[in-house]
Image (cartoon, rainbow, N blue to C red; front, side, top):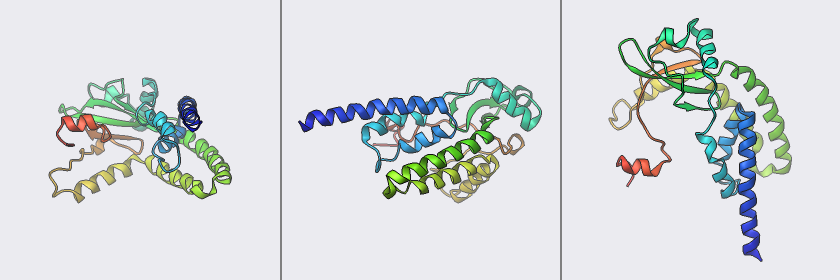
Length: 222
């Protein structure tokens, strides 16, 4: 019957979501970003599949500390602990292109340092070439969904995200745009400790905008 078939379809979607998630986490790199994009494509994918991929939004495995040290040495010629104080080797967040560590400046200011992985430029180049072929193939099967345009959007966004200096400038522009609104806050950029591959920001507490219980606890959401 239809009810039995629907149950089997849902089970298959959940099972496939777990397989896709394992594969993406194994490949890492830009495939994680693609998986994150898929997890919000409610107009294209079944709800069960989307729910199974939501973990990719904040469950990316971090890189080892020595990889972060290598990036600091490339950018500043120093290890993190030689540049700032109380640098935590354990990241508080990790994503497809980099991860975030907490540290302190000489005056005691608590900062969040966003560090790109040292091998990410080459990984992006290879992954973009692979993704172009994948999305081109998918376009042959699903021409109505504009997947070629999805690839172009991913490519544009990723290449912009590789420049942390531009991200810092954008952040300061947003600060100026909302200067008259006391309800919107942005972290300060510490340019002396920032490069194209490392971005040091004022540390600010917060919760995920998708976490309704946390927002309700803060009185932000009724």
